[in-house]
Length: 222
Image 1: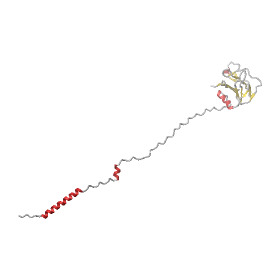
Image 2: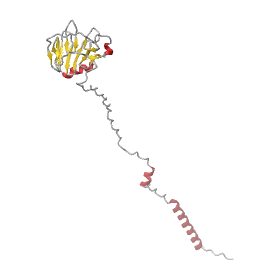
Image 3: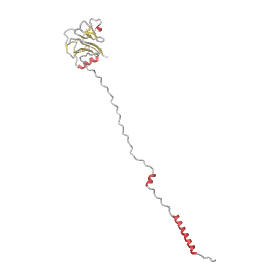
Image 4: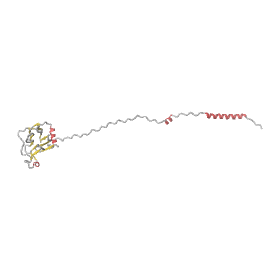
């Protein structure tokens, strides 16, 4: 049996195989895709966090603390002087002299307008005497020559009330007006004449007395 050669078909088959081979090579030789740059949002997401820049806060300088002023207690005020009440302490008596503010009159003896007689410089006695009678004080006078205190004198000790029946009075003594201070520079004794009586002080011994028609008292500082 005769064999029929078909060269044309063989050539077509070979051509088809060549095309397929070329196509395969074309796919292998295609360059890789160019990488695209990351978006700005991605860059921001992967970058390190940025510290916020803030100005440093300066703390205010505290004002210096000023201590409060110490409270000074008010000066104690002396009670008002009652012209109708005799002094009962040395300080109260001295306050009456200070309130008058009058320079003393140099006197050795004097008599007030109410008749109280005072000796400020004498070898016999230094003190004052009522004109008559006296202040009744039987408890103090006891068995004395009188039951009334009629004189008070300065002694080596405290001022001494006397229940006297005699007198130290001498005539022609100068009469002084009310609110007058009589004093002796020799003895330092000074006496203030007021309507209620006479107050005498011996500043060297810080002692004194008051003598009036209705009352008497003696006092020493401290």
